[in-house]
Length: 361
Image (cartoon, rainbow, N blue to C red; front, side, top):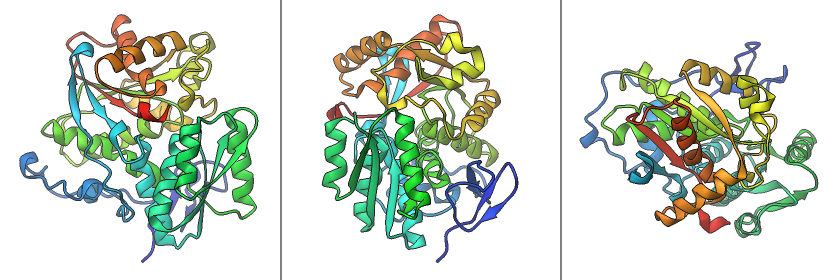
């Protein structure tokens, strides 16, 4: 059994497997599978295989699984939206989708050791799925990582490597270790298998809505793994003829760490401070150009939120029964801001993923 090959969109180079193109750009799958024929009856669609239920869209099967997927899509009356409850996944965040597909690829390749860098959630997910696959893992994390996420990494049998300095220093240390032969880079930012997993959020959302897309989706935006996954998933559904239109994709970044906002609206719009949303404090996303292209293709946007907006929305979420972590509150806070700015109308049909559990704070 072999893993599907990868290709660089920028220079066209092809590889059996590699974490980054020699030209420095991210890699993607060389081929994109799409199903033949019309969308199946949603009432009869068999979801017992969870992520693998959407195998017609997946470049490779998720063989390492903990039953992730098919998270609830519920009405959020206080926000006039629907929330997709990603925080109920096995390790408490949407990162389980990408971890399942990434570790599955590693297992097919016969990898002995995974290496990943993360502010917490991706590291916990990769460590947990590596344990499920019987693969060793080293997870590079900032020295300031939350104790709850550090415990999750350790208890899965992975080795955490704490690094001093800003979040970028963690990535740099991890890349240096990978390039010195420490292991296979299971990067949620660089590995296309991760995006194949996060794309399933779009398939599930459309299925639960009888193969219709919402008018818009508001998502937290750091490295863009959920944002790009949603874009690729909805685009595949449209190209297969299973949905008629794409949703607008609206990003929510942390003020002071908002490179997409800066690219769209200037540095002043990205300025500020938001230490509450530590999970998306990414100054240089690996797939920045792809994120900007997805914003453009969907008539989307990105805005930056400060800590006060996040903390206020987090309190409202908890009071409404949605026990999420602080970073998760960025997207519903952005939903209110988008409406105030007139980007979204009051009657627009909007879905917002709630991405991380408050049990990890």
